[in-house]
Image 1: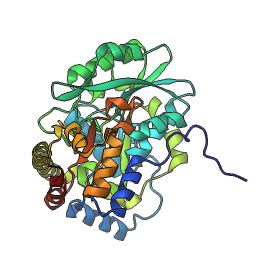
Image 2 (image 1 turned 45 degrees about the horizontal axis):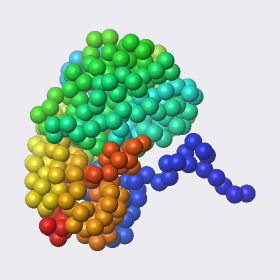
Image 3 (image 1 turned 30 degrees about the vertical axis):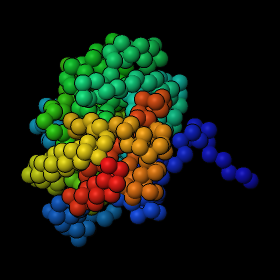
Image 4 (image 1 turned 90 degrees about the horizontal axis):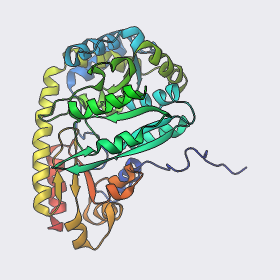
Length: 390
């Protein structure tokens, strides 16, 4: 019998991250495409994982998350963002934020429900909405005064009587924008007016550079209608541990957990105990990482500009979008996808073509996305190779 991918997933194929990473490996390119550090996370956290294994924390975890971890998350969020969550009933630990997204969609979105989505978007958003049978409605993020933002009228027109939720990402991947309190208030006001949920992906919440991270759940009247998603891996440079979480009022959490129990059931037990140590004791490491990434951001942006790109200096995340018109013109290529492949195969540097994150590819086809969560040596080698373009 001929196998066939289900209709709801057929449009998505293989992720661009897997595709570009494979291309980078095949051509021994410096990989500035996929957003993972090429250095290890802090030693005290790795030692805590070993200690948890040796202490016998090796069987199934509590499905909603080990108690030390959910308690650490709750204390941290209350202290930083001023939002209180009950650890045992309002926080669910997931296999990275990557699982938290579909668990939330499957648990809270019914077939035919509309979900407002800002484009460009992280690629799993569209697939997760499709899994739940939801219908995406798009709002564009466009460059304005050196950062990306959205048009309030376009946002308003995206809401309808069928709107069930709006999916927000701040700090925003791939544009690097940190949504302001005013921008988030505009979203919150529409959500309240239409009685819609807000799903807020805040995985880069600690990776900001002078801009204030505001959780939309902290705004008046929003905690009760918001699901906040975040994770441990980006903050502590241990992306392979896949520790994420969803925070929401108990009645929303019930829906998320109903999906989570059949997706992964539970997440790695010893890693959860180590993540709790990281969250409780990792303040100094996070501050050092912010400083390290700030220096990397500024260095890479300056070099990209010198070579002929026009970088949009990000307010958060560890990605730079760079307009490539001058460079692609020299090479005689059109669009971000063709340029990304040419840079990987002929120049030896892999980047992400961000048009794949859009329903309307033209919004991002003039840019490339470069990751700067790499060692100085890796970034120096990438620049050395890219200098051929100058």
